[in-house]
Image (cartoon, rainbow, N blue to C red; front, side, top):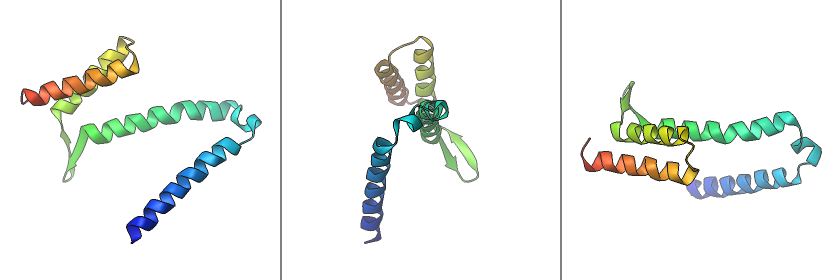
Length: 104
């Protein structure tokens, strides 16, 4: 039962947060600090997600997943070459899959 309560509370919270963003006055959204924050947050969240997925904990140490780190490296290289985002994702996934297929 507590899972359903958490699920409903999370859904309601997401809806209210989205509504708050749509109901915010234009002068607040045009503030330079808010615009910088809106640009920086997705980048920080994506970086945190990549770090959590690429490095996993084993006891008190971090374990290095070679296949995932190769995918991250391939994505960084594709970004450095100014590839579109979809190409970056495909290159990272293909590199990780190839590393796993060859048992590396």
